[in-house]
Length: 235
Image (cartoon, one colour):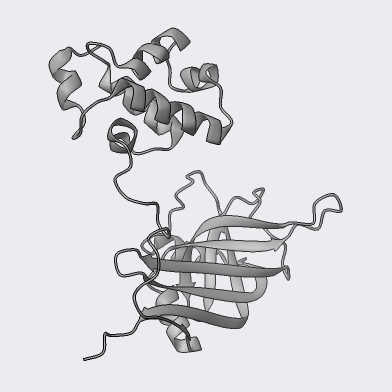
């Protein structure tokens, strides 16, 4: 059901400019390589109605615009009012930045505070020399990294495969952050009790959903990290 003029004025925190909204939709579609017809189909509406939603008119369907934002991978407010801040990492460095190495202990401390990282490995295909990099939910288990995946999925690497695992943190406001890299070998967890114990821990359910019954352990060969800090201003 479409809303009236009052809904049009109040749906977003900022003013609603039809030309700007349509422009943001068009730019984002091009970035994703998506046609207007494909966007309409995935948002559950006709192409003609998508055009009306973009133009906003005297009154518009806010729920439809939210569906468009979801398909485009944009926050609703950003689609309606525009991005108010620069994307992460574009704000420039702090006044007195310094890059420091992290000790192995400091690396493990930071690994234990996070739950999302990336696993990278060589695909081993002659026609594709680029490594595969997959985002995964993970747990620190002792001095290893454990993640859960589909046995037939891309992250289900064979035992003994050389892998790299990375996670990081960025404080955009203060322009500081850190990155930790774990290089080692993959080891599928065959012990059912150990796998069940990992699954019961907080964050044991993968964001991607599904059964994903295979747990893989990354046994470290080398652990390294870097941190960007800001030195205090001289007194």
